Image 1 (tube, rainbow, N blue to C red):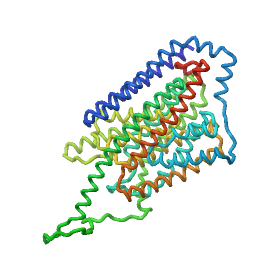
Image 2: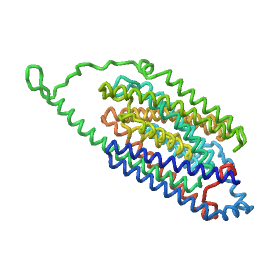
Image 3: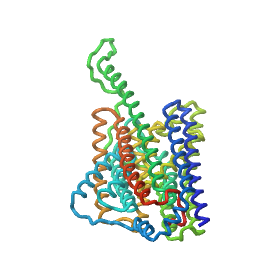
Image 4: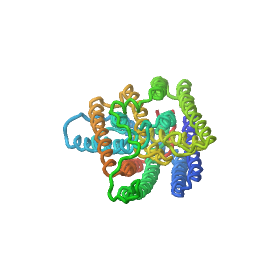
Length: 496
């Protein structure tokens, strides 16, 4: 019990240190970007999350006696154990299934377009409408995110980059964020055992409201820039001077160097980078093997912590290799006066900015582990913040989520955490929704010539997730208070 309490305190302090370091790094980054709104956003996250975590320390000390009474009372102990039991409704045609299908389709379609997955919508839908227990709902949401992400990635692989002759998937950013995202997911799953439910709810609401507001602000800026650009292009097309100095009105003219048209198969082959995909697969397989072996090991044993710790060097080696490459390329281009961006991100690849990306990846994975999502609620807005255009940000975030969500699906399948019929049905719905969402939004962008649509969709999905998760979390927290349940931090080993 003593070891369990110390482990829970260390994990909480680790999360608090991580969030503060993340915020300070982001603050420094925002200073270099000269954005007052970014500074306010970081200050909001830092102050609100610190206040929530520190208040939980107070509740932990205040409610220690209530925890002992809670576990020693037979009736409440039975109630606590019943919440961990599986609740798997039968797959039968009903109004609940129809409503859940509609929500799943819309959530998957818009979630993958925004690059956030939609786990914040799926988990409440599965618990409130269909009636699954929380753990099974989180596992099924991973299946849905995996299906929607896989279909979106396949669609995006057959789409060219909107402005450059490069793949629409930024593999450099994927290699930078994917290992840290997977590492963060394992940390988030561990913290979900220690953190009280009300604290998880509060942190998610704080984070989601902040990121949705920031994304909406970003989308508004992009909308204004697109409006100015459209007006300038209309003026150029309306008035054009030919080689003899004659003024031509409403003249249609072709660009000097027309863009080469490629077939879908040529675009697919061009967008694939097999060496980098192989590296991502190696990370995926390594994490999967460690998770399988760890799940078959006694919790809190020596081998358990050895296997848990091995995830850190794997993630850091792959991240470090890609970070060194970006840093060297940045220095070389800077020395030669080449101001062209190394990858899709427009930031300077200094050590501080690289560390910022590492912490954002871990924070995104941690949120994914706490919530049961793929981590896109952090990765999607982050890619936009560092200057990635919406089409590439959406495609890259969805590509990274496909790896993280599929890892969880395989692990949950081996642990028998979700019913196969529901998993197949909801995954199928999400696959179709992923294709539909990508097709619809690409058409809208082509017609309206506004990529900011993706940013507004991202902001809307995150805000909807904040509302749904907030309503469910507040309802459950009120029930816990009514039942006089323990509201502080739990011991990691004793809570398994």
